[in-house]
Length: 86
Image 1 (cartoon, rainbow, N blue to C red):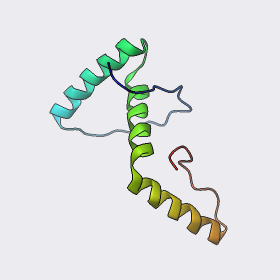
Image 2 (cartoon, rainbow, N blue to C red; image 1 turned 45 degrees about the vertical axis):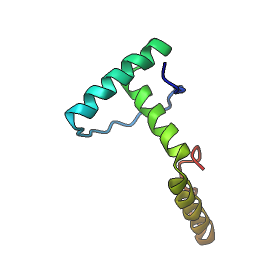
Image 3 (cartoon, rainbow, N blue to C red; image 1 turned 180 degrees about the horizontal axis):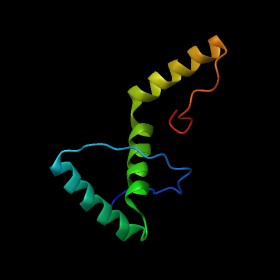
Image 4 (cartoon, rainbow, N blue to C red; image 1 turned 60 degrees about the vertical axis):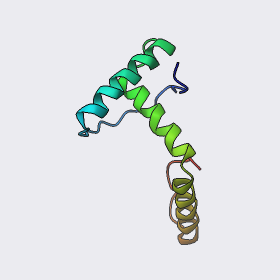
C-alpha cells in the first residue's frame, strides 16, 4: 500500500502539463493504489498529495523558501506563500 496522506483540497487552479507516456502510465498505477487506500480520491487530490509530500521533504526547497521569506520580510513585502512546506 502507498504511504501518502491525501488531504482535503482547497480552491483548485487548473494547470496543464505534458508528461512522458511511461510516467503518465506509472501515475495511473499510483492513482489506482491511492484509490484502494482512500476510495474516491481523484487525480488532482493524489497529485496534490504527492507534490506536498515531496516539497515538504525537499531540504533544498525548504532552505530556499526560508531565505526568500526572510528577504521578503526585510523588504516589507507581503507574505511568501507555501506556508505548508517550511
